[in-house]
Length: 96
Image (cartoon, rainbow, N blue to C red):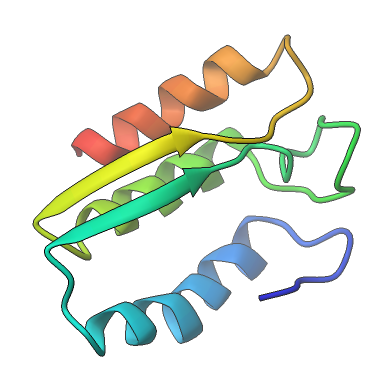
């Protein structure tokens, strides 16, 4: 689902609530696989998005509650200085 450049936490969380959650609830999976990309972070040089550490944590938390099992694969994220903190925030969300 494409979002315009400059989209941040509120935009991503709204899209998750309005599009992702209903789609997943439509087929009640036993396992949800997440492509955990962090290039939408505000300080990432690639995507021109404004998602914060909190946003990634909250998206992960919401994913955790969509299926009994959740797996994640690290994808994008091109600011090596912010990446460890973003992965940590997402892990916190997945375990909340």
